[in-house]
Length: 155
Image 1 (cartoon, rainbow, N blue to C red):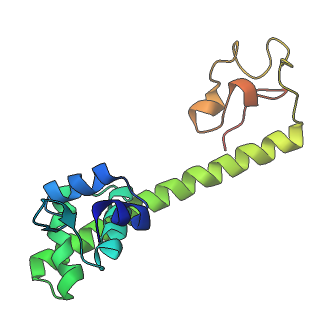
Image 2: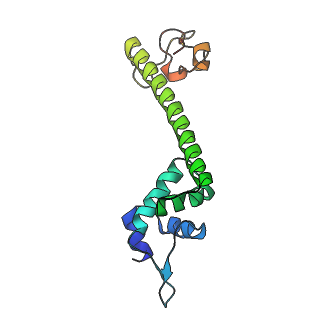
């Protein structure tokens, strides 16, 4: 398939495909006219590359991991690299989960205190200094537009 079709089917830009090829992540053949032609399995490979990029892996690491995906086999070093990357992703998931949970707590606190309309202001002396950060906000609770009624409490 040609580069435009691969881009459409994989949901990426043509520019991304050229970059992946430049980085050694994706292979293509060339027509006599010099156009790139990709194998049918390139769609799945591009989607995997996108997932790995979205997980924060650099192209160098992805390049090292792709042979494991292609062959199903790995050296001990490759396996350890995959294991470390998985652990790193799990740490980021755990951090994001904690952040989400804190936002849930802030949202619940705001629902209990009452939600004001845009443009309404909390009275001076309430919710922190002029939209600034309260002591509770320094521990993870929001201030400013979310500071409702009294100083924020730690979440």
